Length: 88
Image 1 (tube, rainbow, N blue to C red):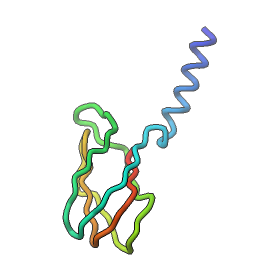
Image 2: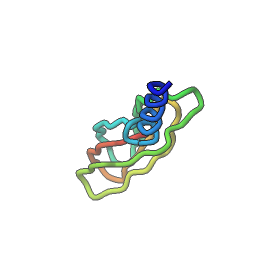
Image 3: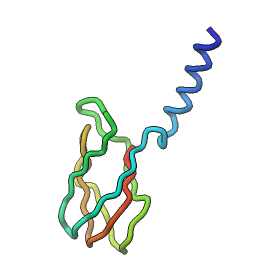
């Protein structure tokens, strides 16, 4: 029973950390052109990610999310840029 309890506690801490379930990827965006990217989180049908963030960008521009679902996220930038996208 102690082993099961230890495993349960360890998994609970891991799953509570958003970085444990995050996906990072490099994305090139063309100005004002929505881009749909597979986020690769393996969510259930109908679920959406909990959040997203730009962790690196090579231009002074804004990026917004237009849509997302259990498989993809659609993002758009005001100017051409390359980003590192984090989805969790």
